[in-house]
Amino acid sequence: MTLTQIKEILPTLDNVEFQLENGNFVPEYFHVTEIGMITKNFIDCGGTVRKEEKVNFQLWNANDYEHRLKPGKLLHIIALSEDQLGIGDFEIEVEYQNATIGKYDLEFNGKHFILKNKLTACLAQDACGIPPQKQKLNLSELSGTLSASCPPNSGCC
Figure (spheres, rainbow, N blue to C red):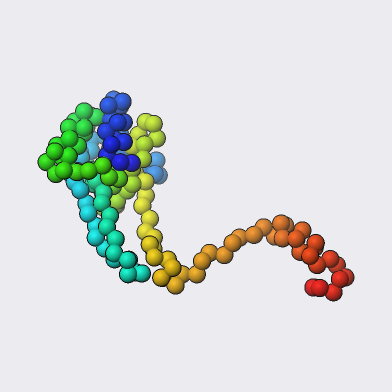
């Protein structure tokens, strides 16, 4: 989800709710403690220099159980970050501490914002020496092909 997309969704909501993929919700008294721009310059294992830019939201829980972040307040925080930091329209990455600090992609399911688990991946698989995945075939589909190309008692098998 991009910054523009969240800005279009927020005015349609009564409450801002974040849910983890496992179904658990971020406690409703969370704070958005940071909105920033993250730029990652790196080189992959194949030697390609890369640059990634993301908008970062940091969620934090305090012991102020009466706190509720409303959509208008989050829009105001976003506007401040755009004005003061010059943040552009990039994909949003959310930092949230559960057992440890995790980074999540963000989606919307029509009611809640979903924190999607991120996975690592090799960006230069051709340079890593990882063999390509073998195509999985259904044996029942193969048997028809084999019998047509090598009929019983033909001596070809």
